[in-house]
Structure formats: C-alpha cells, structure tokens
Image 1 (cartoon, one colour):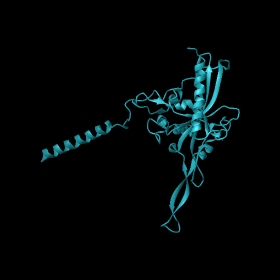
Image 2 (cartoon, one colour):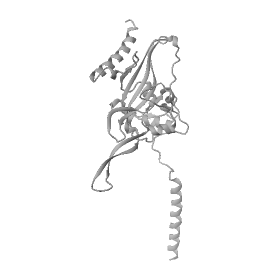
Image 3 (cartoon, rainbow, N blue to C red):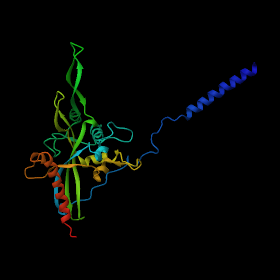
Amino acid sequence: MKNLKSILSFLFIFSAIFNCFSQENKPSFYPDVLFPKENVRNRKPIPYTSLREADVMWSKRVWRVIDLREKMNLPLYYPDSPILDRKSLFDAIRTAALQVNPAIICFDNAATDDEFRFDMTQTEVLNKLISYDKAMVPDLENSDLETKTAIKKEITTADVWKYWVKEDWFYDKQRSVMDVRIIGLCPLIEKRSETGDHLGADKPLFWIYFAEARPVFANTEVYMRHNDSERRTLDDVFWKRMFSSYIRKESNVYDRGIYDYKVGLDQLIESERVKNDIFTYEHDLWHF
C-alpha cells in the first residue's frame, strides 16, 4: 500500500511537470505565412523620371474608366474585406484617408471638378461613404405585411465597381519615348435616390491625387496568378499598366466627354479612335 502511494505521488508530480513544460512550449501565436514579408512593407514607389517643359514636344490629357467587373481588373476589386496580406484598391484608399494622420487627401465635387481644388475633412469623407438601399420591414400596424423602406448603409468595396482615371500622355524627346503619368483616381458607385431606387447612373465619390497615394499603393499587395511569393503591389499594377480600361474623354475645345456626342456602340468606337491616335503619333515619329 505504501509503495502504491509512492507510485501515485510520483505520477502526479511527473504529470504536473509535463503540463508546465507543454504550456511553456505552446506558441503564443500561429503564423499564417511561410516567412516574414518585409519586401512590400518596406517598398517605396519607383520615382518618376525628371521632366522638363522643353523636353515635352507633344502631350494629350485623357480620362479613362476602369471597370472592375472585367476579368483583368479583378485584383483591384477583391477581396471584399481586408485579409491578412491583401486588401482591395478602395480599402487601401479609405484606410489611408481615414487614419489619424491622413496619407491621402480626398477632393470634393468629383462630378464637376477634377482639378483637386476642394479638399475634404475626414468627417466629410465619412458622410460621402453612406448610401441608401431598399429593404422590406414588417409593418408596425400589421405584422403580416411588409413595407419598403430606405435604410442607410456604409459604402464598402462591394459597392465600388468603377474608377475614373485622369492621365497625361506625352512624348519626351530627351529619352525618345512616349510616356504616361496618372494624375488622379476617382471611385464610382451606383447612383441611388434617398429611397434606395436605382437610377441607372454612376456616382463619383471623390478624387485623389495619384502621386500622393503612390507610397500607400506601393505597400499594398494584390493577387497575382501562378506565384504567391512574387506578388505585385497596387503601384505596380498602375506603373506596368496591368489593367483594362476605355477612354471616356480627351482634351478638347468644348471640354466635353465622348458620352456627350456619341451614343451606344459609337462611344466605344470613338474611344478606340482616341487610343489609336496616341499610338499612331508615336509610330509616325520613327522611320523604318
């Protein structure tokens, strides 16, 4: 009996010591990556080449539309909500604009002014990020009936499905290249009334100055097919022109867009005509 008590005491002490060691060896967190990712976190945007007015012998300003529903543009749209290593273009903009010290300034009157003149406070940005949607709610007088009502909701990535892009194409004779620089971006949502009705049009939220946003974009990964260890950033997507778009306006004496004088399929044909004019100008500068 005495030996049995000694054995039980020994087993109790041994189990207690084993539990202590197992608790000490238990990791405080479970990493979800193979290795610490420092490249994107410390990346800086590629600086623009120095440009003089005397070197720009030709330039044209165009406004484009990036439709995020196109397959090539899906990395700018997804994920719907931020995950560990990725976030959408809109989430990157919203986070940078609403942080304590904003890294991106938003500019108001987006539908009529794209010259970055009316900067917004964070409160004004938050008010912009509200929309209305229809919902069926039980009737207060008769619970068997439902009535349509408009409810406020926060605008998220899922609501932003287009972007306006303002950019300048120019020929630099110092380097003998046709180059392009994006000036600004503007997210668009579907326009709705205060009752939640779809109005069948796009509503611009605000403009951001692209050069100011590049440091934020350079630190934001996007999904790249075939190789997760060679991710691109949002800045890479725009720098390398890894997106699909169409032209909605070019600089002109009337300051009007293609949609003001073309309808339907003719708008797309006119957009391709502007794009081809830029290509033809560069091509005609060389003799083969």
